[in-house]
Image (tube, rainbow, N blue to C red; front, side):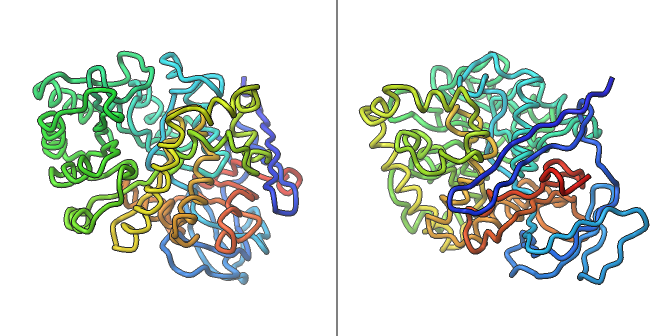
Length: 462
């Protein structure tokens, strides 16, 4: 029997006026059922995801999950349409994360090899969605369950953020990734032959990318050999699948780019990139995903920043993770950890490198590594990553475009990422203009996914 589930999340962002409560609309198990199939959103400011200047007094007609018409305030609603006045609101495309993970965290606070279950993964997909992240690329460490869930979503039987996936991905025996994982979550080939076979298996599962981990973790573990990753790249390209690489050092990044990798899935962090690397990135048309959350999350919670006091953060983190942050000795433990200074240095170098690469015209995408470790919090991490990209020197518009239109290009997902007639009605509606302050993306008024009203202020929609 269908059950109606109402989830209330109170949102208050420090420094902003007003209090908003997010609530999901009634839903059956699986796909959310829309309140109405036709919705007219009237008189909004629209940031369309292309980088173009925002448009004022725009109306959007949503029908059957798509944007059917875009016009001005004079647009007449079809018979039976729900009409919503968005005066003073800003609408942008739903955020897309090009680097996230699923099923690696349990109970909000622990890494576990047992977490990749239907219940846990779908709960995480719904958390992304509630926070306006309407699509994610789960970049490795997936059990084959991910393909079942993806198929259910595409058949309209399952809600949550839309899944793109790299399947299991290819790591190193006794090396990266250094995360607890079931044996059916990661390939660790010991030979070129095994690596090619692993690529063939994932390509047959219609993965969106092949993920490789190329990192010796500051000399602590063996690194993937060039013979292995060259074979992976070659085999993947034969199967018309692109390759994204976990990377840390400039030397590894240079070699991977020269050998044909398609995406660097993290910042280069060991040193400031040189002009030769910038030229190579442009010449080989390689995407760059900075993921500042990776380094900052290793130390920032010990500093008790203002955002930790907001319900927007606390609801995403969950009570068990909040208890960890508040536990006696947590702050001192982080301060005394010899790796903390390294993470801080890596973060600052990453910030410099993003600005240099972006200004030179390298293709910059958006991701966070959310879901990989407990401090990389699905939903919140994406909004905070926008703040960190702006801190690195991008404008709010440039950061938003990376997280919407540019990420759609990276994923070859031409049906989303921008606000245009015929595109999916994946929309994030805000109470304030994020071009004035990028933190305004956290002032969520409503979220539409496939035109379905996922999150809304209670009392404003009956």
